Amino acid sequence: MEKAVLIVDDDEAIRNAMHEFIQAAGFNAHVANCAEEALDVLADRKFHVVITDIILPGLDGLELTDRIKKKHDVDVIVMTGYSGDYSYEEAISKGASDFVFKPVKFEELLLRLKRVLRERQLTQERNQMLGKLQKLAITDGLTKLYNSRHFYNQMELEIDRHNRYGHPCSLLLLDIDHFKEYNDTYGHLEGDKVLIRIAQIIQSCLRKMDTAYRYGGEEFTIILPETNGVEAEIVAQRIRTSVEAEKFYPEPDQDIKISISIGVTQYHSPEELSTFVNRADKAMYTSKQNGRNRVTMVFVEETA
Image (tube, rainbow, N blue to C red; front, top):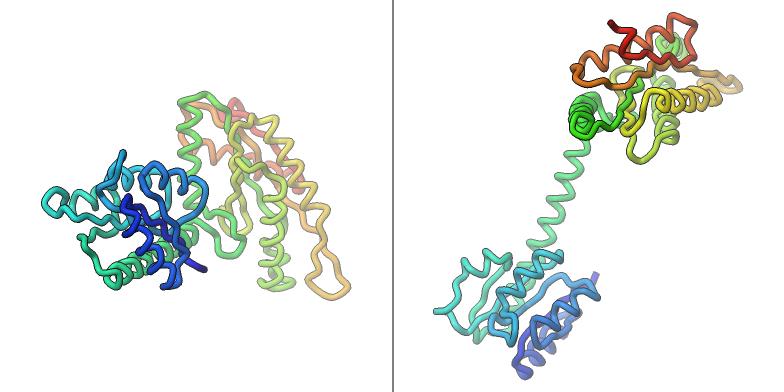
């Protein structure tokens, strides 16, 4: 991808010579004669690096750098011919990636430009890697749902939101019926296919604000913000019937139906998180005891 560079200098001769040199070096170079024009150009197109003189009419190069870094993902190289009036530390504090003194040899400027771009790429790659590692830390490797550790972190946030704003929050806890028997009969690879598919079905039944988690083994939890218990029960029934309608083929010409048992409850302040989760767990086991493939709603009064 061709890298775009914006050159900002009020000296037309320097500006044009620099533009010609950088363009010839294989970059997509553009020019602006003041900070205000540079900001207008940046608003309209994407640049990777801005090279700016520090002395400009109107806004100076340091103020330009500060504004660029606050609004754009762009690296800035600052140039100055007044070494006594401006310091490297001052430019860096505004967000500049490099600081060079005039008169600068274009070959040296090109080396600085390539170094800034290389560091920019390394930073982006590092951030992408950190993002992947952070995602792995909170994601179940098999189902790609969030894991139980992230569930408790998120549940704490939802409870805090409820306590501050009074918004309802409900929880579903579901378990796959007779899953051990399925695993023992058809093997863990086929069991994994069931877990993956049920996770997909769960996701397809949720809103963007809802989050689903693999709680452990064949158990899943679902946090439903802005949702009371009655509304949560409707969501649970939608998930249950969607799973019930699915067919699995652990062996050729053999289709198997899977069912799930779900417990539903709504958070009531100021109860502890463990009390809330245990109530959902109790509701789920009630569904198991009453024949499986069903949804049970447990209200807070029933735990008294």
